Length: 317
Image 1 (cartoon, rainbow, N blue to C red):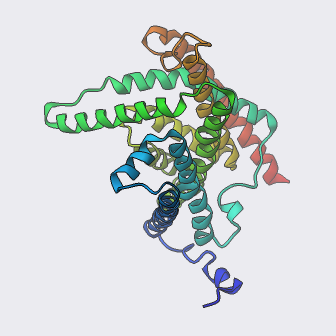
Image 2: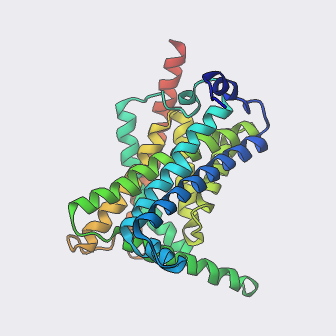
């Protein structure tokens, strides 16, 4: 069978008039199909290259080699987020994919600078919320869930430290690329670009679309004791998209948040700074969280009004 351009055009926007549940199902199907396909190709390639003696040794190779882990993380960003975002957008819209994903619109350079500042000022409050979230205890009947959630959190923390523990600039740049660039671009495309639009159209409410997407965004990280700060960050990213109508501003905020964390970990790990960046703004420095939260909220208010004014001017012209 020869696949012609007409066949592709026939698929363009084929699910654009379906209900929200169907569109969400399509988005999930595309994402997991892409992930399984690319992960399968990766496993085949690694098996051919390394020729492991058994499945157990192959699994130990994948989970124990940090370089391979970073490669898998990068491939996952493409397979689970970036490729599916474009494919799903193609299937869900009769307009252009770039319009659906809010890729075309730009904002004033001042707004970009304000968003970068807001993302930085949010960091101490994120640490304080993470500390508060981590202190949550469950009633006895949920003890099993708490043990399971704690084990996931500890495993994620251990893996993150191994992943980020580098001693040279090349390693730092690679971490920034994988953890900040790819994660920001990929996650914003699929969560804010696709899922938030689906939820908004489904519920007929931008507010519900923002918060439902933020909830899913936090849940899929499978780190309950970081759920609250990630939920609020997801909502912040969602409001940025609604106010500015461009995916690039939530992507910038996401990149700044992850990038600063990566650089701060590098500086602390290699002894350039003594303070643990994860403790900045926590119980010993709550005053810093209070100050930066006020600054953050002030900047967010400024961003909202500047963006809405810019959109109003654009619509009048």
